[in-house]
Length: 374
Ligand SMILES: Cc1cc2nc3c(=O)[nH]c(=O)nc-3n(C[C@H](O)[C@H](O)[C@H](O)COP(=O)(O)OP(=O)(O)OC[C@H]3O[C@@H](n4cnc5c(N)ncnc54)[C@H](O)[C@@H]3O)c2cc1C
Image (cartoon, rainbow, N blue to C red; front, side, top):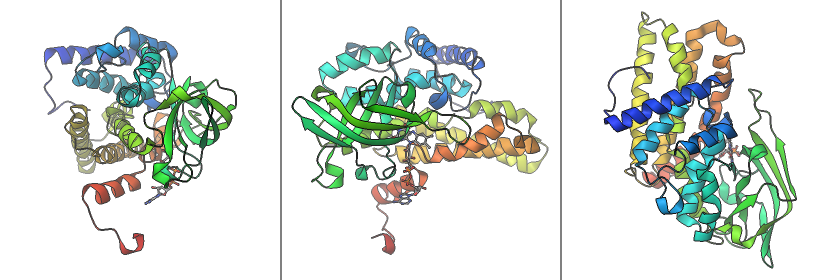
């Protein structure tokens, strides 16, 4: 965002942020689209560059191959990279949530097996959670995993699986106990995407991009040592994983570069435009404080629902602002129109705003439910 009141980092963080900005800018210039680079900007080569710089697994414990670094260092690096539009998508899901999940719930053997490749930038992961009839309501998912001797057999279908077409591994949730209450019969698996029985069908979205996919699983054999955490205990694990997915800086800066590029064209003599710029700049700083609370471990459990709601509605506001600044030019197919077209996704992916507001009202504030919803 523009200059003005901001955090005062120490020299070490300032230097790191500047380095990341210049690395990010150079990488972004090689990409066709800078917006949403943490989701659609795939590059195996850039993943390896991040690894060479020690920017993957930055905060993970050294004994598990991580960098053991301060969470603020990771924050300034990825804020700069994503805000510039660097293509971090190949490593992002693993760095953001798979690694932390394996650190928390995986066995030592699983950590030894999967973390080194993530830190080396040589593996790409996708998340197989949503299904055609189970998006918001994860508890209703139907993909089945049945134990047979020393492995599980998985049958079912996932949808909207980002990066599935190029992923090496899928972190998959499947029903392992069909007789248990819906929340209680789910388990998590790491599935090799080259396994026989997996078919990936990319879906072209409204902007013409095909980053997300249908994933069909027919009799896929998954070794038993690929079950992560507690058998039938996925629900609490996945709620924890969603906090990593919802509370980070990626949710605030997806279209930051576009804002910076468009803002100089705004007519600041118009009081309404000035007000909107002031509102955007304020909202950005509030969102950043929310993310920083998450980064520093100071946010209450579950608060990422608030952070994600605020930050993604902010990103939609930025898209609208950019459209209003360029006016009729947004009717042409360019970065602004692409972003306007893509922006509704911000408040859907990772949990819709309606669901997140429900979580805040119900579980955090303890508000009474409407009579019709009881
Ligand atoms: C760009 C993008 C990337 C994605 N990537 C992945 C991925 O990598 N892996 C993955 O597993 N999933 C992914 N998703 C899926 C995403 O998590 C789901 O789309 C999301 O959770 C909503 O589920 P749904 O699409 O089934 O909508 P539904 O759950 O069918 O909801 C439809 C509408 O009804 C509303 N609604 C539903 N239930 C309630 C309720 N109880 N109260 C109030 N309103 C309600 C919702 O808010 C929404 O507006 C991605 C989605 C997008 C857009």
